[in-house]
Image (cartoon, rainbow, N blue to C red):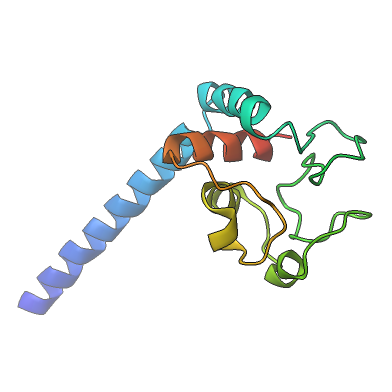
Amino acid sequence: MHNNKIRQCLAGFTVLALFQVSQVQAAACAPASVDKGSKLFAQECSVCHAVQKGVTGMMGVNLNGVAGRTSGTFPGFSYSQAMKDKAVDWKAESLQAFITQPQAFVPGTYMPYTGMAAAEDSAAVACFLTRQ
């Protein structure tokens, strides 16, 4: 009987924790966060990357439609073997991890960017990219 109460209590904590995580993720992609991400992208990323469809010839891959794409698959872009081998499905969480520390997330990536240390900032850029 005591074990059942413990299990029920742990199950309640698990549900609460999952609810809180989903609330944080929803808040993280609120319009204000996407706007902040747009500004940060313009400051930090747009030197090498575009988000406008059809733009080519930049140092970095075009990030239009990156959410839902598998890493290393944009046609015509020369990726590192590491990026091709990673084969990650880009979504907000994986984008944020990559933006935070590209070399740690994909060791051997060609991307020279050292990363965006502030979690709120990298989350905002990730949210912005998922809307492109």
